Amino acid sequence: MKLRFLHCSAALIAFALIMAPVLRAQSTNPPVPQQSSSGTPATTPATAQTHPASAATAAQPASAVATPAPVAPLPKYFTVPSGTRLPLVLHNAISTRSARPGDPVYLETLFPIVIDSRILIPAGSYVSGEVTEAKRPGRIHGRGEIRIKLDNLILPNGYQASFNASPTDAGTGGNESVGKEGVIKGDSNKGADAGTVLETTAAGAGLGGIVGQSARGAGIGAGAGAAAGLLAVLLTRGPEAELPRGTTLDVIMNRPLYLLSSKANFTTPGQASTLAGPPNREPQRRAGIVPY
Image (cartoon, rainbow, N blue to C red; front, side):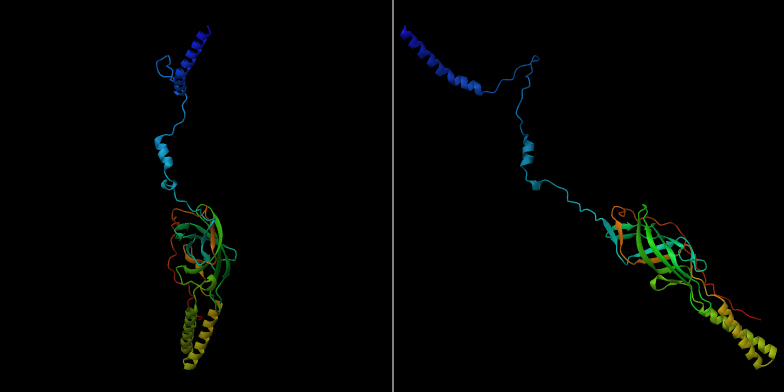
């Protein structure tokens, strides 16, 4: 009996040794997908795998991937430098005959101002200011003078900025000129004054010679005529300084103009209003006066 038990134990040990490799192989094999009722393999969870193309892209160096060039941020302000010239056209007429300090002046830009390839002040922008001085021409000497101050810029989008500019040239259709510090001066009447005295002198001499029938009479008449001519000059003003509607003014900026970049970055040059220029006009000089 004991011998039989030993034989059975030996047989069990031998069987276990034979089956051990088979059991280890089965435990390492992946599970077989189960068939669904429709005959197709059932879905089983799977570990995430990397696509070959994705792996290749990930393997490329960072320098090989195209990246957009960085865009430099705009400054807070654009600057129109001091000394910039601005061509303007006048919308309201001004004359020393009626102008008073404080009267408004309305103008418009005729040409766009471009700084560093950026349109900062398009044509058609508005400029406003006021008359600071209006002096009528004197009776004895002096010319009519107009002084204006330009201090406000209105861009086409409604943005306003303060600045300071003075006229350097004026196209009035007459003989007005621009002097120092932007003073606009009227025409001089010296030639007409001399003509008035000569005309009255000659007329007095002729009339005196006829009446007196002598050179003495002519001399007395000439003196009287000269006095009358001089009196006419003293009692009559010279030509007024006139800036008709449509007058063109070139102004120069006396200090830099700073414009917000978010408000003054235009893509079109703009367009000024159609406004006829002033016609050419002869200065209104006084005519000779014959006092007889």
